[in-house]
Image (cartoon, rainbow over all chains, first blue to last red; front, top):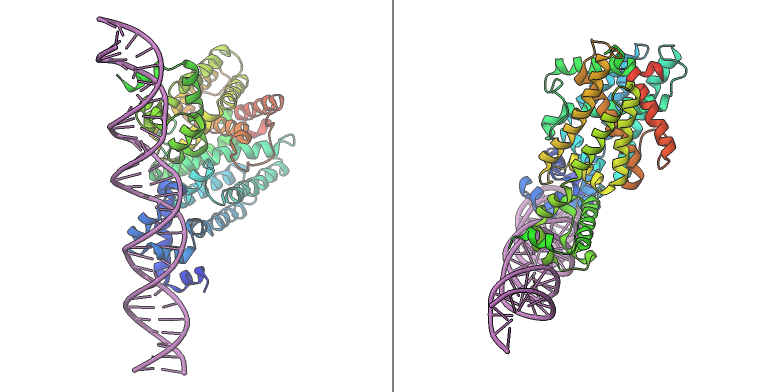
Length: 218
Length: 218
DNA sequence: GGTATCGGTGACCACCTGGTCATCATAGAT
DNA sequence: ATCTATGATGACCAGGTGGTCACCGATACC
């Protein structure tokens, strides 16, 4: 019998609990620092069971991360499609909020993503990061290009450079929103609406406007 | 006799070699993953010697990182003071280039910084990150404020928000420049002048202009 | 020559790691 | 009642970890 079959056969409740606790362990300690012994102890099951389910540590990690990218992708697609035709600033604002929302509702996955970003010893790192990076490009590019086509942005605009800049601000904004939950350390400047959805919306709106129009429209 | 005295007494060449190899070890594997055994082997000295010098792993790490922040601080201060009075875009460009330059000439320190960013198990993490974050705020804020005072930027500009945005783009730009050396994985969009100083300058200039004027001046 | 002081050494320690596997408990089929 | 299949277990393994310390060789002082 296949190892993964065993995991699929156990009660769904237990499946969820295992994956949840595992993602928490990886989020807290990274791949290297995560301990299978500690995880088994916290779950109250034998270590051998976990290895029966996933083969090895890497298999468990893959299982934890799989599917999460699709989830984010769905939210972004929805934001892009629902705002088609709206002004650039409003569309960017939506993307900012979707990103922040994802980080807040999947804090463990987001923390793992952040750790993976600059830590080479995660398995599947290149493939997973490529997927996420592709998301940014795939959803920001059409938004910028539509604004260019509609005349809202000049024809001379360098689209890849603009996408790069928007992506930089997006990632940083999301980090900031998720900061308290993930203990990301001290951040620059004042707190731009942490935990407060209303202030978060306002900050996103102002950032989006500033992105579209530059500092001159601050 | 104090442990650190022992280190100060050995030949300077050896001191430098030890610190250099240690920073490489931390850069490659992070704090947790760095191995004192491996380091001793690569240096060709006994493990006991390293512990005599620095007490423990944490002491070694502190010694490696100390002083590097001052170095970056000096370069930034120079950039800020030398460009006083110049247009905003030119000043931002200089800051971008200084950051990229630092990451390129101190790749190990920069890699350690990146790993520390989202990895909670680094010693002294909060203090060190706070120092770096303070640098951004300390040098970007006066630049923006001067542009506001000189009328180049409107009085309505939200300075902290503008600093936040500039910092986001700055950090991302530096990451991109240092990417190949540090194996940061796939990046968004095309390569904006990696390794090529001339293209790097050009990208910095365009990014700075785009920051100051927004997408409309692409 | 004797001795104290220094840097340098590596065997050794307790502890933890990911991973294995013989063994057990149980439930369903015959 | 017996056999089989499946999930669960935890003692056990080899190997690596950060850290220690009794000892060594050399140099300098008396």
